[in-house]
Image (cartoon, rainbow, N blue to C red):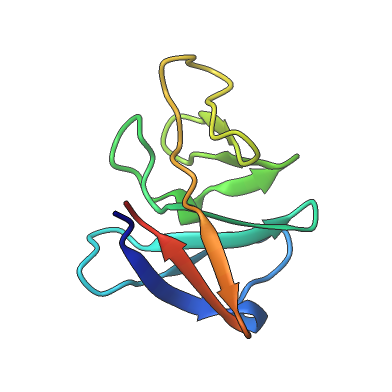
Length: 104
């Protein structure tokens, strides 16, 4: 069973920018961005260590973690530096101009 939560409006999302959105009951914000014309939602924390990913950079379709420079491909979630790490990608549903994500 999915836990679908409202995150933001489509107009709140900037192309190629990391923007965190707080979600009630969730410890870390959800990052929503648009890269390559696609909306992408991911956790706001690095799976390597608890570092805020929204303080990182978006480069070539990947989030670069500011903690240790690990790069996570937003298309797949895979880490380019450690095959054992993956950044979870949340499924997105757009309803009108609202962005909802499935956290579970």
